[in-house]
Amino acid sequence: MSYVIDRRLNGKNKSTVNRQRFLRRYREHIKKAVEDAVSRRSITDMEHGEQISIPGRDIDEPVLHHGRGGRQTQVHPGNKEFTSGEHISRPQGGAGGRGSGKASNSGEGMDEFVFQITQDEFLDFMFEDLALPNLVKRHLAGIDSFKTVRAGISNEGNPSRINIVRTLRSAHARRIALSGSSRGKLKLALTELDRLKNEEPDNLTDIAATEEEIARLRRRIDKVPFLDTFDLKYNLLSKQPNPTSKAVMFCIMDVSGSMTQATKDIAKRFFILLYLFLKRSYDKIEVVFIRHHTSAKEVDEEEFFYSRETGGTIVSSALKLMQEVMAERYPAHEWNIYGAQASDGDNWNDDSPVCREILLKQIMPFMQYFTYVEITPREHQALWFEYENVGEAFPDSFAQQQIVAAADIYPVFRELFQRRISA
Image (cartoon, rainbow, N blue to C red; front, side):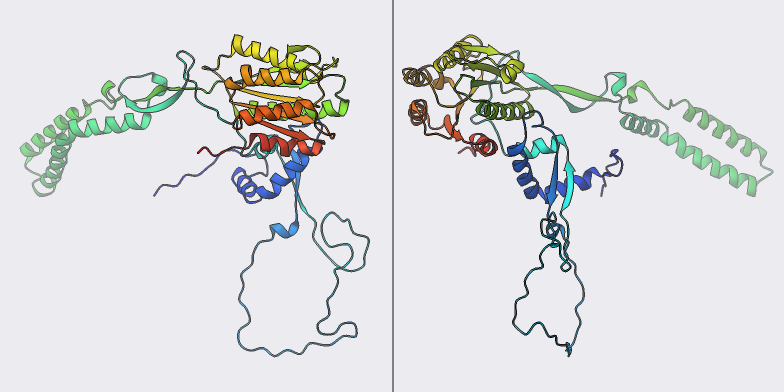
């Protein structure tokens, strides 16, 4: 039986194994705390760690003990306040939690257990069970990435990859094979020499001959080298192709004058959540940022999130630009193409049918998945209903959701990108 002891260095007063076990055990509490944290966070601290509270009653450990055996007869003293069958009310305050009750001279409780999770742990819980829908492999010649894997042992290789254990094992086996018979004869000769010296000390001729034979055998054994080039063994490494899933995400945000600052903030938080998810979950993915009012423009990440440019509203300008970029840089037979659009639903009256036609004929046939998020507490306008027609034509690759307040961002995000079990 083999035992593996993990002696990796941990931080001071920390245990990696115990922490991981603790996080697995209370993952439901932590996930709920993460969801609450996402809804109240600002844009700048979206990816920081979080302080998690767990009720004290949920971390109690079961205790096994022996009960009192036999039949017991006890007499309990009475009292002037309570009689049999009465219900005793819970004391006001001091009953655990965060001390929300009023001061009281009775009752006792237990505070919540509070601990800090790191940034990586926070993001792991936030993006758990999320995935890009319909992601497929795009195998293209010349763009495969390669991973290095162990491929056994070789007799030739780089000195830096020498396998010391295998080399010494091979050298030991060779020495046994080449000098085994000589070592056996040497053992017999030494035994014979001891016998002659003890039983026939005067037989100098046989003693000298035996000593000469012993010296000859030792010289023969010493001629076998401890290590030979034949013994050298090297770790063989080989490169295996690792086809990548090439994907691109188009992020389209409405920055027109009808978008209030609160609405823009919600849209930015949604796209930051999407951007963190993509960058953390997928190594090979590109993100195209498009801002639009009456005209659309492809921008970088900094300008997308922080530019103050505004204007009227023509949504079709962004969809036309998206289609042009797709045709120019991202052919559908090579790329998994995704789109995410956020708007307040306001649009120029005659432009919403144009948006529907562009999506139906020029964009959706090449998309893996397209999401539309409408950020408004009001009734839906023409753009939403035109997009419903797109959803009916492409039910598996088009989704739309409404966000009313910041607290809706994370639930809507999980609904849009929940990992789906393929049939």
